Every structure is written in structure tokens, then in C-alpha cells.
Image 1: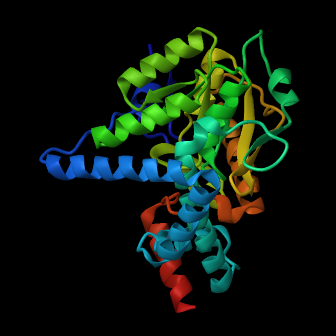
Image 2: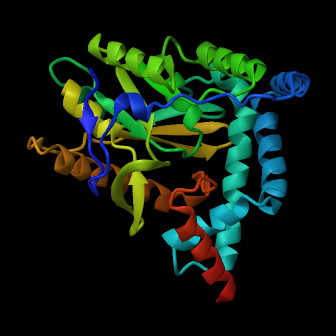
Length: 333
């Protein structure tokens, strides 16, 4: 049976199952075009592997950092920046947008090399800070839940967790192209050290419940908009936020640990683990979820303020009308 949560404004309650709404593959898609796209993606992955992680990371960053700022979606990023940092001038905005594209390109370039990434003292690889907070957050012998953001190289989270022996699962949105989807999941599986990936949808929701019931844990990227979520402050603006993390913490009596990946060099990352959130469940479902998600968004905001060029600004985190209005006001200034 699914646990329910309510929207802050009293709208219809939703369940974890509905939060994990399945993605419908469009009908009438040109299958030949989709197949060719899959072949091109496969070829791109092969090329990145041949180049090696340093070159593929750099090439991805260079291409995305050069072309990305010219694309229409960069207007979304500028609107988000105007909402988040109303006093920021256009020169700073352009620098951050270019940096965000560079980071995204590097994430793509590094994707085919995830399974080779290891804990190393220097060079390509990863290190960890605050690992003691994970053990300290165990409750009744069970690992905590984790939350993070599309920051640095977020694809490194599950491989690092797997290398640490943590039974962490993640949630993914399946690609509509079956060729691309198979390759993406193959690469994630190779790099994950036994971690699990759950697709959005009813089946994924059932599998998550079973995974947590069996003592596993979950890592959620909670920095994107959920249209029928709850209203939570984010950079001083109302942001519709998915409360599933708070819902699961209450249902399975787990602590919640903030973690995020920071890019600290060419294909080098630091996983930063922080002390578990401090909260008390009062039994008032809506108030409890709002309290937890306020703390979550405050952590996200702090991370983004520290490394704004490493966040994925191209997602409409706030309602389209707010972003469009911010862009128009900025252009008129």
C-alpha cells in the first residue's frame, strides 16, 4: 500500500507510485531515425573510450562550453540565475552559463569511463570527505537515505557508493530510444559495483519499496521541479518540490544524509558527506514533510552558491512564467 503525502496548498494527495509516473514513449516515431541515433550514440561512446578520460572530459567540456551558450535553452539558465541571484550582472551570468555547459559536457565525456574511476590520491578518480557521517547516521542498523543534486558529476554517486559497499539504489528516467537506453544502463551497471537503478513508473515504485524493506537504501537527486509537489522556498522563491524523500524517511524510519559531488580537477571529484539532517516527526504529515524539505532545499542552495558553475541551470526549476518574467525584466534593465 502506498503512503500518501499532501501538497502544501491542499491539492490532491499523491503517492510514491504517482511520483514515479512512467514515461510514455511517443508513438509514430521514425524507427530508422531512432536506430541511427542509437548508432551515433554508440559510436560517440566508443570514441570517448578511445580518447581516454582526460581527453574525452576536456573535449566534451570544450564543445558544450562553446556551442551550449548559443542554444535557446540557455535562456532558461539565465532566467534561473536572475531569480536565484537578482543582483548578478550579465557578465557573471554568462560566465556561469558557460561554466555550466562546460561541466555538463564533461559529464557526458566522462560517462563511458565511470567503471574505471577509482579512489586515488591524485589525478583522475575520486576522494571522499565525511565518510564517518554515513556510519553515524545508521538507525536500527539500517543505512540512511541520501539526497544530492545535479552538481559536479552526479553520475559518480552510485559508483562511489558501490565501491564503499553501500546498497544504494537510484531512480532514472528511461530514454525513449531503446538502443541508447540499453547502452546507458549497461554503462551504469558496469560502473555501479552492484548498486541498483529503478525506472520511473509503477514497477520502479514497487521495486523501491521492496529494496528498502530488505534493508537497502536510496539516493535521490531532489533539485528538479515537480509540478504537483509541495511549495518549498529555494533561493527565496517558491519552488515546487518532490516530497518523496521525506515520505520514505518517515515510512521506513531512516535518517537522511546530504551528499554531493564536487569537481576538483580534470576528471577528479570529491564526494562530500555531511551530518544527517536533524528533524523530529510530529505526526503531522504535511508539516513534517515541509520541515524536512525546507532543510533539504537549504542544503542544495548552499552547495549551488558555493559552485554555481557546476549546477545544471538548464532545468526549469521554477514555473515557466516566473523564469520568462525574470528574463524579460533582466533584458529590459
